[in-house]
Image (tube, rainbow, N blue to C red; front, side, top):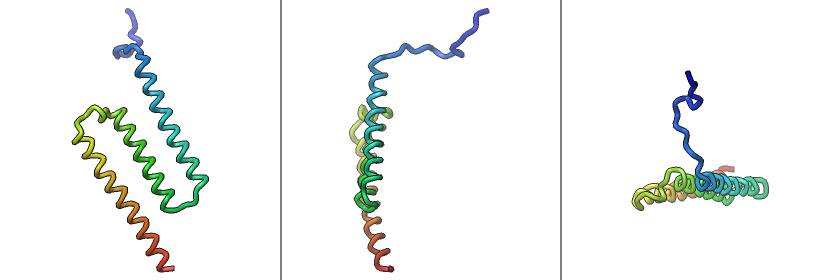
Length: 108
């Protein structure tokens, strides 16, 4: 009786193009994250730094959605139904941070 070492799973041949794409995606995300670390340790805390963090995080999320969720291959309305609300969310966060900072300064 032969033993099945694959646990019943089909063996998928390795595709060099897909492996290269995964490594490139990992490299791009690593570079963006490294840039965020540089900003964190070199810039003063404030609205600009937080806005840059939010923008870079959205860039990473966008890239992950396009690559791994294959939204780049989907219809444009689906893409815009995700991006447009994110843009308004960014605007809301920045506006709230600015107003909150002004109110906080007024009380002290």
